[in-house]
Image (cartoon, one colour):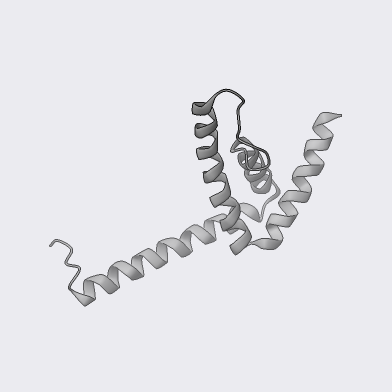
Length: 105
C-alpha cells in the first residue's frame, strides 16, 4: 500500500512515527551526555566541527565553505544539546575546557 497524504489515518500514523523517532534521538543524546566519556566525545566532535572558532581560511573560499558546512552540523548538535540537556551542556563545556588546558601543559 502506498502512502496517501489525503488519508487522515496514514498522516497521523506517519506523524506519530516521526515523533517517536525524534524522542528516541533526544533520549540517545541525553544518554550520551550523561557519561563523562560521552561528554568528552561530544566536546571533541564540536571542536572538530569548528563550533568554537571561525571557519574562515584566508585565500581559500572553497575550504571556507566546506568548513562552514561542517560548522553548521556542529551548531545543530549544540542546539539539540542546549534544548534537551542544558545542564549537561554546561558540564561538558567545563570539563572540556579543563581537559584542553591539561593537554596543553
